[in-house]
Image (tube, rainbow, N blue to C red; front, top):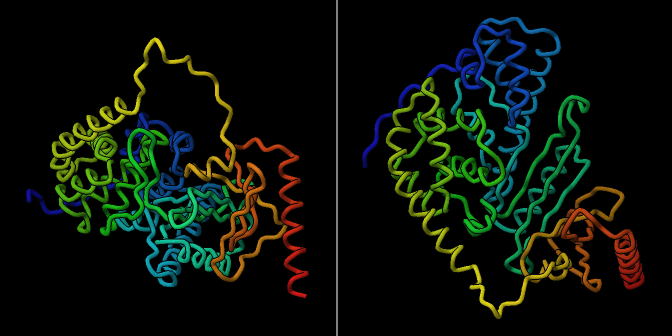
Length: 387
């Protein structure tokens, strides 16, 4: 294998951040922080931590913003260790794992914590573990499929220390590593065994949802040059297997376009990714051609179709989103999951509560009321049976 020993990552300086954000280093620090706030990924606290390391004096507001983010990331790190110790097979993606590759004095901010769980039992175990130690006050749930092939996204939230200025704390628990990407990749259930590889592919996969950010490029730069990073050939092989070579190539190209972040390993990675990305793009184009029906004179003109019902989405394995029916939040013992059909609607009863499953944000109030009535009737029948 062609590889080079890890290089020392370049120091992360204010000048580097000015350049990364397309600004003149002569502009005041407040303008750099203001520009950082326009970026995804909570970049402003990172800028403030670099400024502090260079001896810049922070005011009371910026000092407390930096302190609050340190408290948040420390809490996520503690919770990550708690979950991986308590739940067999739990894996944390990105977040605390990436932060360890940054220079010691630099804070890598995290808005949330992403945790992979290898199945439903592990998922509900993790849910109860978070409820046990954190003041959870909101739950979102997504169900994809049903039965043995079902997959879940459960998002648990609680209020930030300063809920007016900061977003809620957020933990996303999932039973798959990377979601299905229409026309590009199927759901990829298990993450790579290697932590660095799984983290970098998680960043690459997010390119389907948004453009890469300065923080993404910094993540790649510091991770590639860490002693924990596998050889470029291994990264490319994983990107190939997980159908993410084009996206990882874009991130690698973004790093090369930042000369102040020179990375010898990235120079080895780029040509290998170029070939793998070309193969993947060709495979996607071929799959798209094969998926398109051939239009003929006899083919009727397509007509607008109504939105699929929740029942149809469930049968087709499309995502359904939970509208909570319980006024109180409290996890239940056991791992029982029940799906009840209410005509074309679906009622979910699971360890984190009862939900009307919906395919979109628009819900008929009558459907919601019918779900509440069905839930009340079922609970009444159960109470009578227990009496």
